[in-house]
Image (cartoon, rainbow, N blue to C red; front, side, top):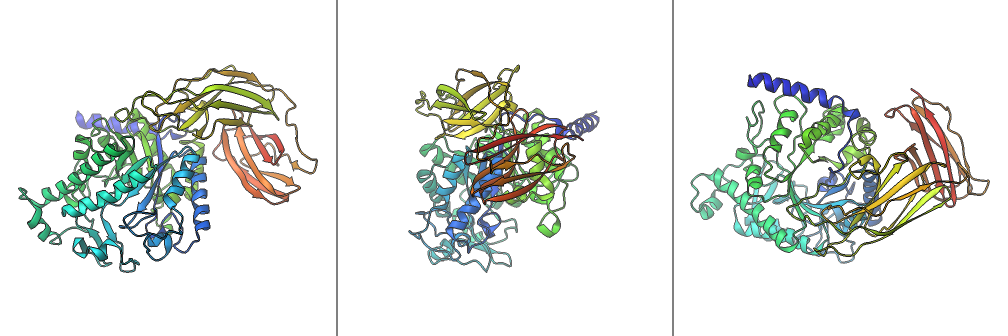
Length: 599
């Protein structure tokens, strides 16, 4: 009977996620991407970029993820006992400056830059640390101040590379790595600390730490139990230290996706518990993490069945959050380092997460897997699973005090657009205040429902107290409200609602006659159409596509665009038939036109 029930449950789950295109996303969902810096996987693209080029690449990455409604970045700031930030205890990374250097005072601070740019976009920034990895390969350029040079006895060497990591069994090593992390927590306005799963090596341990075991084993008689305890002690130390300094900073870990081979039933493979000595269940039982992100880098079905692993992790949480770690890179072809998965595999995994709210978030490995848009995965997520902005889940055990609501919400109508303005509230009873704002909108006759994700039209940064809605349709009536969120995503009460009707001349051109936005052709179209516009001078220009509710569908052009005639193709392959709007803003020139997708 149990087997029959399991089979029926699997059929139900599969039938559910096969309809991924029709589901409504939750209002709260952690949507993140790992930005890997080791070996220049994601950023910077190579170690010889100028600082200007590095910053431009970072902004491009953040902008693309913001357009995909991703709300958090996990930035690798310590790939191998080195630093992607200034003034720390370790040298600047070779992946940043070419050859590892000490603290180059003339260099900018990459971590602070990422924090500032992420927060401008209403996104969280979690600092991702590799706890013990020391040297990646024999080709690594290691500075004289690197820990592998200053404390060679702390390093374990293994593999053909050779690969080095700090010995997790040495108490001084645990204290050193913890001090590196806490230094960043103290000095930077990060939203979270994140670990990957490199504690003991995947290549296996033989006798490399036998002397360490002899010196520090205490009452342990089984070396595997002692190794697990070393990891558990270190995690508890880091968690407690973070909360003592900044209780609001989240702590999350991304362990290997299989805790023990055979758990749950039918799953087999490497065991994190016995092969790399990581006991994530212990961390959850003792509440030494705020979220867990197991690397479940497999498909639905087979010996590492995602549809079995993810629900099992959900049963171990002990009140903490589960954010799935998903192998988006495997969508790529083998030539690009992937496994040639269909893009729908990732979409279906997200849909499985949402059944019963088992996983409250999704983390993609890695960033470029989405921004490279392999097999259209970025387009598919934007059109479906991540179509609407989402807010990170609140963590009541860290903070359950809501911020005060924004005040003095006002509106004006000009140039066929609605400008909202409000004032930032004061501090709540916990001395926290607004860190970002959500703007809701409803098109009459609908009313605003703050639980309806489809009505969130933007999430702003904390220093933004105005929003221009230039997607309204002349003659239509709208309602708006704005709420505030604190640094742990608690939402305020609502402001007073504003209702208004947009009046003016529809598709009025407020510009010199030398500007032009042409009617798309063909129109109606299926699924591709051409949009053309002319600029008399170089200026910052936006060309975007919206649906009739004003939800952004695509950005076709953004940035300083030269004078002249420009042509873009727009594909509605992932959209339903209907009327869509395309709008250009260039200086004072604003124009909107309609187009019809007819499938």
